[in-house]
Image (tube, rainbow, N blue to C red):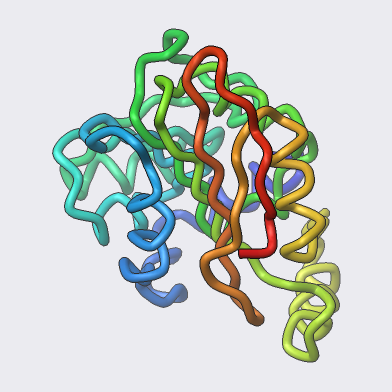
Length: 201
């Protein structure tokens, strides 16, 4: 996450859940359902107050965020938390079944690092699911302008561009949901399996 954005989220943490809409479990489940293993251990990277974790029926979600205030709020919801950078996830290699990044990737300066970190911590068959906003849509252009106006260092990617980067990161990528809000999912292949496949599904 961009350093300046971390400070804003830390200060805004107490009001965050009141200002934000609830996470949509259907869009996230569409990506998680592509995992080729049971999803029991999930990392909610850049997860803030745990909006995504609370929306999902997953036994062991862990919220990872760089902003201490956000983690305090997530713990208040009864969630396990770890302070850290999504591009350097502070968990062991091949120790989780899924990583979700919901409405947060545009705040992260090192997108390829986030994808690489997810690949490292996922077990084979695990899934990376990213929920983002498309800056090429009319609403997306408005969101880009609004975030820059309030001082965020946001960098948005269109769905196909993100899917290409997820593929380059060693995943089999797909786009189960398109629009202003879209979902890109990547499945980590088992050792010896390729990553061939169209990201335009």
